[in-house]
Length: 366
Ligand code: UD1
Image (cartoon, rainbow, N blue to C red; front, side):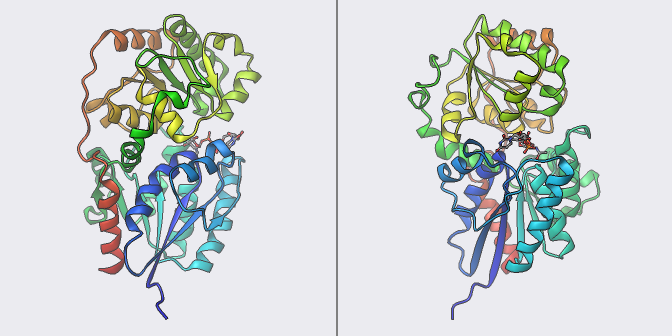
């Protein structure tokens, strides 16, 4: 019988994971003697947050669904660990691949490391140096335990070396999410979203917000939306709302500030790319969107005090404006009046999955 020689277990769980695993599974599919198993933790479970992405990005249907759902950090992380351990025992993988910095990433890494299964972390080395962000804890723990650290930009290498990670474990591969972006860009046309928003090419702003530090704190959230209301008086603003954010708008009674904003539910990957790629401006607290704006050459205002992706500022289109009303409005004025230089960080070239695949293949087969 022709038995597979090696098994890779890929872990996805939350919306920003799917676009990172999809190009990698594709790049690895023709490797002889390699079996790929896709595990979906179910951290995100809404159609618009998870299943829709799997279909759109041509990921295979997950082989295992852990269905952990939403909960406190400890409960969510614990449930992923308990269920993922059983998957590892059943599948006995030779390598576990994790991406990004969500709770599922850290939970799967902890399990694999304790079972002595090697871990590859794609998007390693990013640091905001802000431990109030749950993702920062996830990054630190994941990188401490991973055997292969695949970084999107040189700052990632610097951070890991500073933390004492041996240089031979670190590989600068570029940004894998940008592979997915380039692949789908030709499909991203405004007519896809014309039934939900009224906008003209290059003449509107896109807003996303979901960080607990922004939307769970009433004063901060109100300050941000006050700035958005001022911007919406001058330029159409489209706001696809994350479920967490939707709940807080209601809870804090902030709906009035959104009366001139074009609010939609969470969008699928290509619909959202249609919006961002034709926008004048992006305002966000998301990590991935800072990178996508840079790849698209569209100015991005980051509504946070820091970023774990400094390359989007030094070599991209991103500006960190914070969360105060006046600062956001000032950032908006500067962005719409100035000319933004279109720069693209090295190795954000759509070929990252190929580089990662080559490294994993060497690791597994020598
Ligand atoms: C998670 C990640 C974050 C990532 C974001 C992208 C962590 C710590 N955070 O944050 O890094 O940027 O995903 O979206 O892993 N909910 C639904 N349906 C869903 C999923 C969530 O309604 O399919 C609601 C629930 O009310 C839930 C809340 O959103 O309590 C938050 O979900 P959770 O997965 O805990 O974190 P995110 O804020 O989505």
